Length: 284
Image (tube, rainbow, N blue to C red; front, side, top):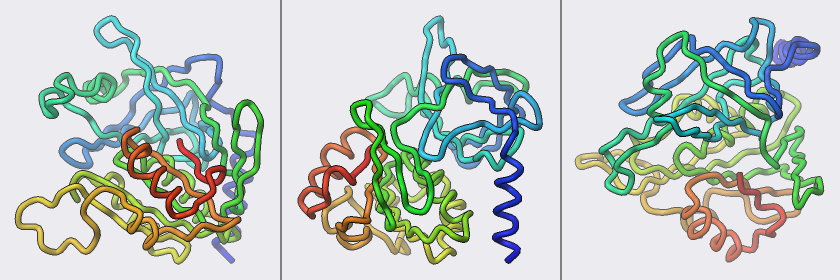
């Protein structure tokens, strides 16, 4: 089929391409494009060292960006929405945490505001790959625990994401859907503050056209006057997990990424309560 021919041509193109990332060295990447997606969400496109370079990020891994902000070195981890199929560029979708918006965080996000203020042509330092989870393909993960590499099988993958924690989920789901031979099924439960805060909703809706991908949303609150919301409201609960994620099984894995409180209070206890084995529940 054309789909499978395209998949193999892409794989061939990546082989032998120079790799950008180096775990021991910071690489400066130049900002070449910035798109405003919503009032606080941006897509930043960075040029790799040449138009032939790939980023070189294994699926499931992330990278760090670092910059001097007011004389202090600030380092944060991100997962790009682009992949090694995107030769010559790296795309990041980032929610900017502005100062003076959240009473708990009056200064906002140091690095996201730094990115927001970058001009086209400015550079930022990138280092990686980082992370303990690597999706190999065909439902197989290689997970590093206490220095040991282990295999985890997920023919069905449940994903629980909060806010910008959705980016590693999209990275894995897109890799699966790109490969016509990977029959892994993905079930994403995605929590946000309001419907307007849903990051990468256009990408998610496109993916939802594939039978292998399923999504369900929950939001903390609905803005006044919203009456057509077809999904859940409230924090992630055992009921939501039972209704929208695959049930516990030997070949089912659950991935989680989001605010620490969500993982600690909403995800882990509810997954335990429903009988998901701890070693197949992976946290980014």
